[in-house]
Amino acid sequence: MAYCIVNIALLTQNSITRNMDTSKMIKAYCLKTKEKNVPMHDAVITKTAKGGYMATGNDGKGNKMAAIMNEAKAMQAIADGVAKKGF
Image (cartoon, rainbow, N blue to C red; front, side):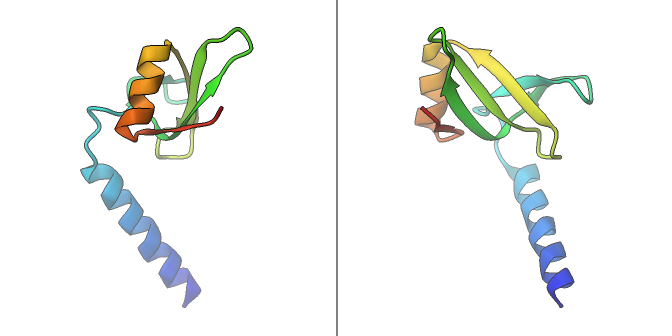
């Protein structure tokens, strides 16, 4: 019974991801699949030691991703709700 519930939750999450508007999402290069401009899911913006901004997240398939960005783009992603503030 628990197995069925987990499968339903995964199917629902995948259908939500497919129908999501990706125009405002942070896009990055996925090293594992070698794809460019892959939308980043579960993005968290952090501040680097030198004062820059970095977004970390995954590609929706579990592959980790990271992108370095300027302050304006980082704050815009937080304001749009596509990333969480991690600093």
